Length: 135
Image 1 (cartoon, rainbow, N blue to C red):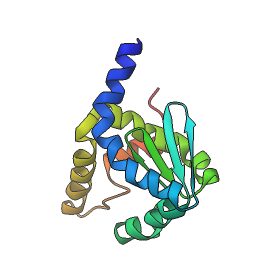
Image 2 (image 1 turned 90 degrees about the horizontal axis):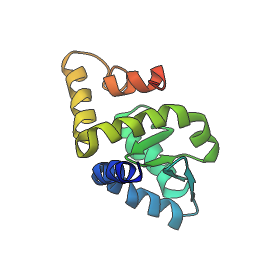
Image 3 (image 1 turned 90 degrees about the vertical axis):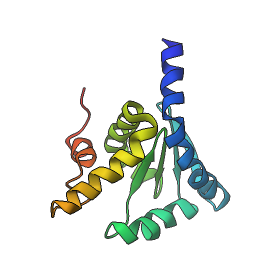
């Protein structure tokens, strides 16, 4: 079982690595990190600014949290706690899709836009996350 668990982390690693700079930015700018249920959560500092301003370019109001493999970045600890169920669905999605998670997620958003729908709220990845865990 331990080998399988390690393989899941390896399969997800390319997506997780995208979150490493944001995690370091959070740490180096007054934010923090915590390890919760096998996921590294980073919050505050430049990570919070990224969620508000950079993500805000694409998503009105920015984002409260964002999952990148086994890293979740959030505005603060309270926001991470409040969004944990939703973000853990994205962690499971990243575990299924591995290195294809980000392209698949972005592609799903583009398809929704081409259909005249909302890139975020109508994205099947988000709809599944808002529906909650699939257990």
